[in-house]
Length: 322
Length: 154
Image 1 (cartoon, chains in turn cyan, blue):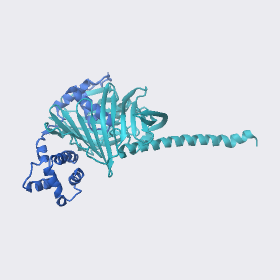
Image 2 (cartoon, helix red, strand yellow):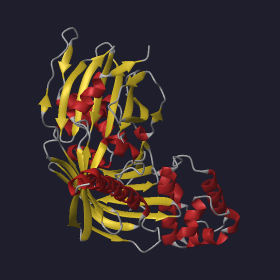
Image 3 (spheres, rainbow over the protein chains, first blue to last red):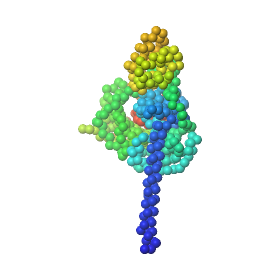
Image 4 (cartoon, helix red, strand yellow):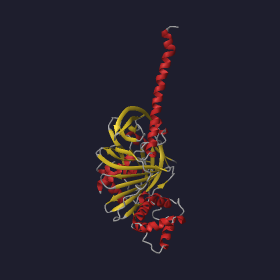
């Protein structure tokens, strides 16, 4: 057997297999890093300052986060613009919002607050994104692994993730469109691990001179009404459906919320009544796209932090149960 | 002391065994303040801010029975709270719409269906939906954007 044949018969396939294995492992390793990043934001105790950029908009936020006795607590204080404090315990979120002479208290359902932006269940993301290792960078005085999440199709944006090389904490994340423009960016300017287990920071700065007012509109009716059938693009799933009451009208607006694990999209369905003007068309506002049209006597509006073709596709493929 | 108060509010501690906490709550302003603030957060999260929880009522009743009671601050805090009308009325929708309009750029219009008397999508027409999306969809970044939209117009 000649050396050439040996090479062809054994070494070459073995070499290819080795290369293949390595790339598979590399991708798997990166998903392990992502899993660590998703967990670290929820399970570590830390305090820091992060900045959110969206177009011309910049907001600085001070965060304190603690995981104690299996429960997660965080306090976010928005430092720019109007005073605003966001408290979360698990999925419950309460916002103290200074508006003119009063403090409005709003309640919200669980949102992926920075740095807990990656879902703990990564399976949906694995279906729709490939990971690509970019290198290492210093963020907020910490060494970070830089990983790109490249979508498999044009129905979602690309994300770049900076994950703390030691702790796995998400230090920074950006959203990039198909042309490579950064649409949104959120990241720490400074961050430190907390040693204390004291929860005394978990309280709002109460202003005794101002009235505290509850915003009732955040009491939502969650429904399981299946009248509307959305034929969603791959990877998107319905995560919630709520009923919005419009004051002075008898009709209610249905809001169906979809997510692929990272991006979220809302589909609004409102029955057309006499005198109501139909809205048709599309609109872009930075990372947010809107598509409106009328179907079967219903006004449909789709809004989401996804590419224009995604909101359009969702809007056009809605059907109604007969 | 604060931990004990928290545990009390959480219902993790037997009320009868915590007499010293009530005494302390009455006597020191700092702890009383912490008690009240903790209630604001916890009760709002449990959606029972507007109906005092049984436990809280029991604690307050306990405090009332004491001869040298100071006015329980949690009660005075909730007295200050009044309900406002839901945001989803036509009036505030239009305000939110005009507020957010300043931030929206790039309007593209599609061909309209020929049969329906439709209007083209205009900035303020769909802003109410954008605000609702940012309010209720689970996304961190959009939360800050919504914040910006509200800040701008007020």
